[in-house]
Length: 220
Image: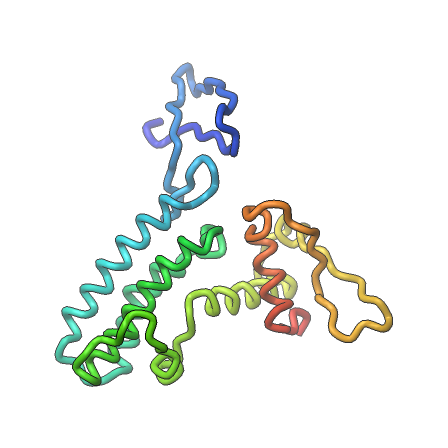
């Protein structure tokens, strides 16, 4: 019973409140709960989760910097970064991936700190703010978090349609687009016009848009 709570998910400023109880014991109301490592807030913004994730990933990145100060093999440094930092940044990200760009930029800054550290290890000085790090990213074969997220969303859509991922509910939410005869490039999925950011960046919308954007053969 100590692990049971009541959460009301709504965007209203004055939500309806009702007392629930189990075995004559009322459940306490919470604005935020953690389930399988993901923090869900009552408005589904996932801002508390991003805050906690940025703090945790920054600490892990600092540990990588301290323990690799004498390393000269870039593959070891890359493996450490993926094992201790990227694994945090991408855990269950199809569920909580930021709705607003300001929160995504916070995660990307942690990502860029790693590439700046690599430049520092090579040249002895940190690159300036806003410096182009594409050469280092290409050499280490690491893309931005947004690009990696889109690639994984597209693979998720492919796995869902190939029945490698068992989720009938998500599958029922994916609608296919019927193209015109004269159309050259048409999206595979039909997505209604989103009226809010939450709808625009909902998990189903993201996996369908990523598959269309990357032109992934979801039926192969």
